[in-house]
Image 1: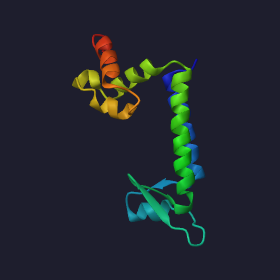
Image 2 (image 1 turned 120 degrees about the vertical axis):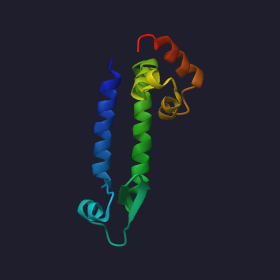
Image 3 (image 1 turned 180 degrees about the vertical axis):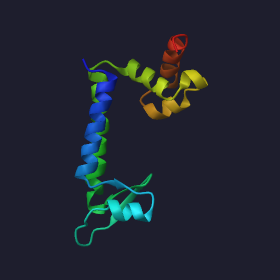
Length: 130
């Protein structure tokens, strides 16, 4: 059985490979853009997808597909390793919910597949331990 940490490390490695394969890069200034950009095919342009990220427009469809597949892989790993509750606890800790007393950031990070009641119950069950 895998751990949350092992799955997240594997997810990060897969993400790094997707970025490399799709020639994705980050730039927060013109200088960084010029330094990090890749060579484009004739007629291609760069596409910004926010947060300083860029990639060739010709890679955008494949990039979106890769990201959807990675998201599904992560969900499957959590389900197959019976780690739903541990993922919730990990996100509660990651977003310092036990310190702030608020779980909204955790809910946002987990997505629509997790309910307020489910997350809040795990919060309450672990409140004394954190």
